[in-house]
Image (cartoon, rainbow, N blue to C red):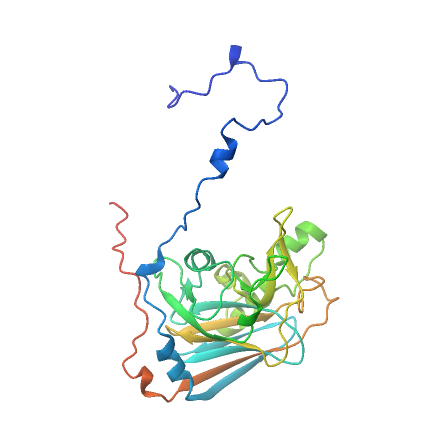
Length: 300
């Protein structure tokens, strides 16, 4: 088969003995090129702050679930309701999964959420669903840790850059079987909710929003880091359900993630999920988010 491109020629087609990488003469020029934000989000529906704030002034709690340390629980949030993840007893981070409660194949899409908003989320950002639904699942309507911003290490709160601690990575790095990673916790919780064996539902567990977790990338090696969360009892992050939701929440074995995770050495605390219905007329004409309108033909 003929080559489809011409390789870069080297004198005598010989491989250089010295494989030291030398920057090209125009290296500075290439590095100086202007960054361009990948997605212009002006086309997204605007965040109706006043609308949601009016609705949340008249909330009535209709359900709550206490998630035990190093474990996970599920919860249901009907479309048009609010829910909160609340810190109780001590500093604790949480890993939530979200699904369309009517179709588990539509779930939270952390990567697209990161691209449309930022590496760390707060009030006004939305949590988007997987293809082909590709719609807002939930909107963040209040965040008591919004004050944190960015610290001197480049850390922020509520990231969508990490995944979730899992037993497979733990086995790879430490060589032991640890069953209370967030991935395993969420798997058990979903298995209990659906009444199915873990092996039949594990594939529905997906990347998370690391609620309350303080993370970033090191300034020297650019590695993903975690540090002690600023969350304290009473802090919460609040969401508005744009569709019918099934949620799963793991109280991470890392506790405040200031020392370790995927083990039993760190103090851990419960997390509380509260579900609220608004009695305000502000939602009278509200409609759930519609599935993405793309035809699905993919050029065929």
